[in-house]
Length: 383
Image 1 (cartoon, rainbow, N blue to C red):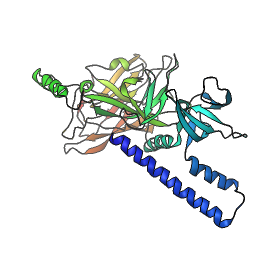
Image 2: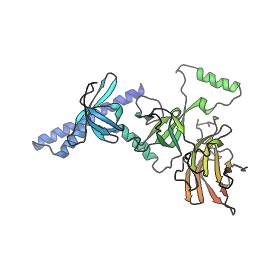
Image 3: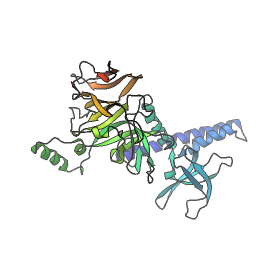
Image 4: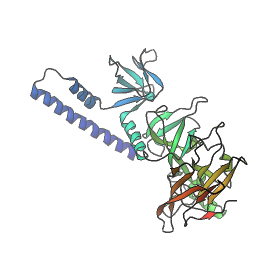
């Protein structure tokens, strides 16, 4: 109810601002005794009165003569085309916009709302993308099923940017830029069921798991070929991480790979390896399934660092570095060129503060990869 009230107040404020500006515009015309309006004033008037645009998100859609079933298709529009919104309505539980196209005829008609994203929502998506403009992707992923792209990591009716569809065998692949663990909601506001579950876990002397306590949300970046909206949040159950095939079988002891980066130069894609790609060397961040929340109820993004080296002579991967338990946050950043690389991650120190730690990757006299970690980072000797 609170969110609906805030949204309503924002809409009222927006309408009042438009009304004031429109009155000022009419007053200006009256003072100047203009009998015609230039193209510039027409654009200004359209922006104030209409106040919103829509960008086509479907690969192609049609502006129709009306929203009736028997309406005619009057103009085909494609993904990325911008339309002016003139009006909106709901017909048989389906939302429609009356729009004006930017073609030579300024074609006007109706388009189904699911085929477009309005300008204010597109701007929210662009702001999310701007937050990560200097950050490398942390992983690659694809949709398990049709999913809603949202501008915040929560299920709500008023935070949906658009719907991403998985059609048949066509995969929607995107970059993972980050993620967030969101505590699962109680069954009801007045229910003690969640607390009873926690007490049962304690009595059984079992540690609660991430899957039991949290829902994970992924912050993603999308290519223009997939969506005009460049970024957003997707519910984790609808996401499948594309762990590189040459190392995916090294997930063990309940660990899951959550971020990775290829550190050799034999493949152009540093996040995914197809069946036809050559095996490579990787730095990987992994996470156990155990809850490790601190006093501020924060969870680490990862709790172990691994480096895999592919030996082309034995045709096997060798674990050249495996950290002890760490408390790490994103992002993983990889630098350097050729055989000499570094990677940096924020790790929490004994004082609870995060420090960026840089690891150096080099080759020994025999050409084998070796990792030199910071002196204060725990490690296990590679076997």
